Image (cartoon, rainbow, N blue to C red; front, top):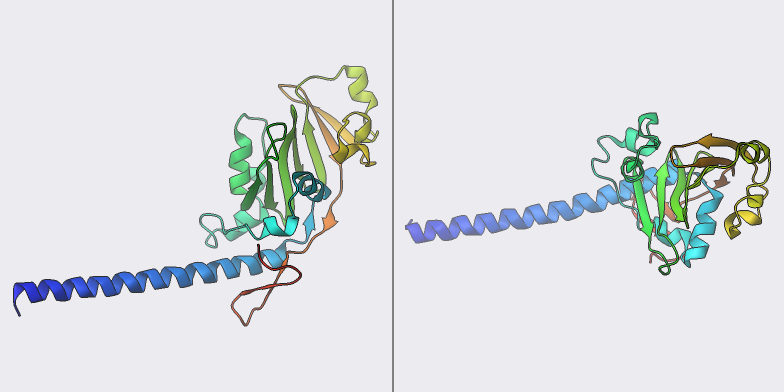
Length: 228
């Protein structure tokens, strides 16, 4: 066999291998996504009631946002830590920790703001629930395990901080998400930049907007609406 023929044969084999690798990657990614959606379907059963309120304010559908979820880096090798939300990954008071915590929570989607007067909303999966992080003006809001933490950019007078415990959060925070609710303030925590209100919102039942079939390898089947 001549050198030219040998080179052509080698090039052909490399092309065949490249095509096979590309096909394998597509199949692997499709199966990984299907398995991840099965994982979410059986594991995510609750949501913060603020999730629906935030999506409604942003003019988007919660179900459509769930379709945007993708397996986080490293899944499923370390799926338990990413899915359940390790206590070590809880949001601390350190600057810049929110983004790190959101990434470690497992999966998240960011809803862009409607305009410059609004902030983006991050929906995240953590400990079997859909939670959110956002800002309302200068007030940072995040939910976790049936509570909403509202970090104020200022300190409340001691008398006020003591008096608001047990009162509906809407009496202190004049925002539509809170004024129509009777969610009580369970505590006031002092932070470096101001006080944080711990509000008992509870959780609501939640179901992912797809059906999955174990026999079908986790292929998606829209339950109510087609995939966006």
